[in-house]
Image 1 (cartoon, helix red, strand yellow):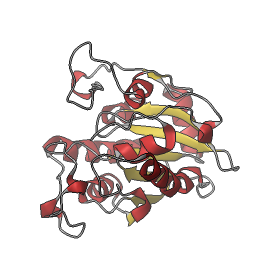
Image 2 (cartoon, rainbow, N blue to C red; image 1 turned 45 degrees about the vertical axis):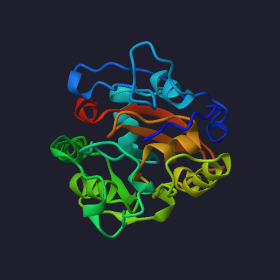
Image 3 (tube, rainbow, N blue to C red; image 1 turned 90 degrees about the vertical axis):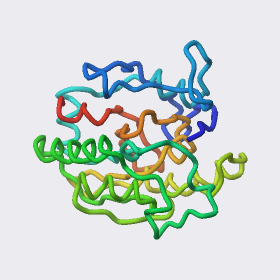
Image 4 (cartoon, one colour; image 1 turned 180 degrees about the horizontal axis):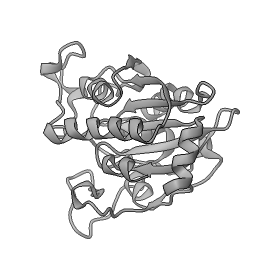
Length: 238
């Protein structure tokens, strides 16, 4: 998908710029590769959203992050797991939300990523209450494979365009922000499974690669703090 190129002012996050310096992983297969919208070239300048993702620094990590997740109170936003290919199917006039055959599908890696995420949540005793997804098959199937449940919400959907106007970006931000800022049930976490541009619209961060998650803590006043991001293979290492 095409990064939006937003300025990462992150007003909803208390004015903090979201960045992730943890751009390497012991598992090379899971290492986040940040590509430019054109497909990426070595030395090519990133969009602002891609740079924000590449520069993000975790506030919580390792045992401290795991302990916080086990206590609950967080929103975990997943970009759906890996698909067969990456293209703007939301802009395809033949695409139908109720027909998975017209949409991008999870590939074998994405299916395994989803299962591994769910297994790690069970093993690490990370409590989950609601699992809310977009209406796209790759999102709710990621959720079902990981958590065995999902509740579809159109507010997590792309708008049906490949390129967005500023007004459309604001519309996506207005759609998803209430989900990012809603307090989870006591002692639980809320899982959201959506898409790259939706998250970027709200935070200025383009989450890459597919399967990446960001952990947010709602502040009770309509904002949130970005605590950490994790690749699919990193949940089991907490």
